[in-house]
Length: 297
Image 1 (cartoon, rainbow, N blue to C red):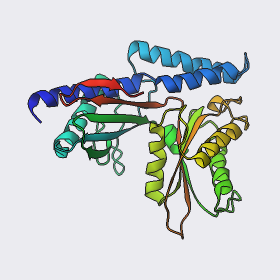
Image 2: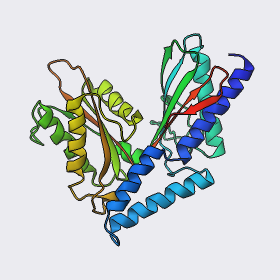
Image 3: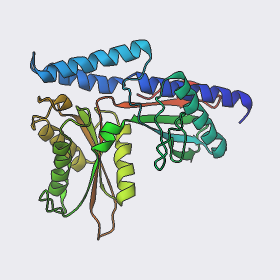
Image 4: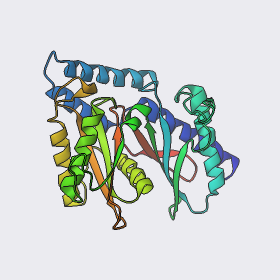
């Protein structure tokens, strides 16, 4: 990359980080608004949803983080084949450092052995970068900021699971997903969104479950069986009475997104990732000059 491209691409990456941290995507805000409308006036659930909506508005106006926990920084990128990946990776890290200095990200990455904070969100495994080359000349850059509270209530099940009465079938999968919601009990800053992977191994299952958060709230799964499962789980979860922040109410989940991977016969994993209401996910198409051309969410 020449110096001009590096400068423009760096600035575009910083803007993607800023926008993701401070502005909730339209599809997520619309789902939150829908949930607010169905909660009973004067209830704790309605109060919680009102506070959430106020928070969203203030963060956007002030261009400040939606949540003090700016979470794990996860990039999902497609880049032109001729691009030097090492240069791109270094540029991404520099953008994260800049965004941290500007206050778009909290100093949020610590050494797991010593507990020492790097101060710039850079270290082994931070940020997380999933990147693939493609034949196009532009870049597709998607970003997710996943807070620790919602990450803590993710769960993985190995079927059959006698604890929840789950066998190796879709009914068993459904029992596992609802058990994860029940166990979260608002601790993941609900209302939440679920990303689920059926199958794979322990690592690929969790990775694929998180990738489901890149889908829009209102989309429909291409697989009719999984689409029905998504709708059914969301409906049943919203009948549990957990509600926003665990205060009770009708809005426990905003959506459920499910995918499936092949597995070896001996294993049957169900991996459940949970995303809080502060669903910080954004993306952009960036042209070969390094300039943002289109926002994706």
